[in-house]
Structures are given as C-alpha cells and as structure tokens.
Length: 144
Image (cartoon, rainbow, N blue to C red; front, side):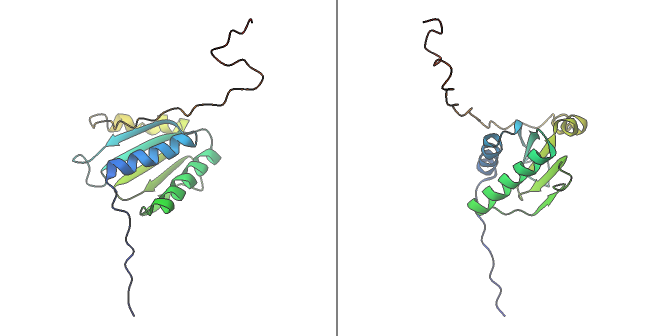
C-alpha cells in the first residue's frame, strides 16, 4: 500500500495571517488584530484575534476561514469551540485564529496577555459601500 503525502501551501506565516485577516474583515469581524509570536512562542508564529457579533456570526467567520484554507490549500490542524460559538480557536499550524464574542474577548484579553509582542500591520481597508439610491452622493449639495 502506498501512502500519498498531501502537500500544503508553504505560504509565509505573515502572508497567511494577512490573507486570513482580510477574509475575517470582509465577513464583518470586528477589531481584527494580528500578533507576531515568532520568537516568543514555540506553539505558533502569529495569532489573529477577531470579534464576532453573535454565536452564529462566530461560526460563520470560522466557516469563512475554513473555506479560505481549502481554497488556498492551507493546513488546518484543528478547530475547537465551534459548536458553542463563544470562542472558536482555529489552528492553521503557524497561525492561530481566535474568534470571540465581545464579552469573551474582554474576559480572556489575549492582547493583554501578549502585550510585549509586536502587532502585525494588517492594512485592512474598508470596502467602498454603494451609495443609497435615496440619498445624494457625498459630493452633492443636499440642499440643491
């Protein structure tokens, strides 16, 4: 019997973290923060922390991360807390993704725990929103 070894994408951890952060941001995650843990933790190189509005939103964010991992052939070693949806932990080998509801994020305060590590520049841009057809465009005079 032959064993076929699956080859995963060897994307650098910082590129992977930015890609995952952008997907979380696109799916309306709040306060997406990246921490660089390389040299500070033997467990991982980077950590992303994001806030979900509700349990279902946390699950949807986790689904979006899983979908991106499949699309990009990124290895997912495990997912914990999905069913409860209060704190979903996703292990993508060199990047950990924590998706919290707001109360849980404040309670566990991972940013405070890792205060000494550098923050990752994620450069998350707000996507332009289409103008409402009932409102004047921002550059038009509303009184005209």
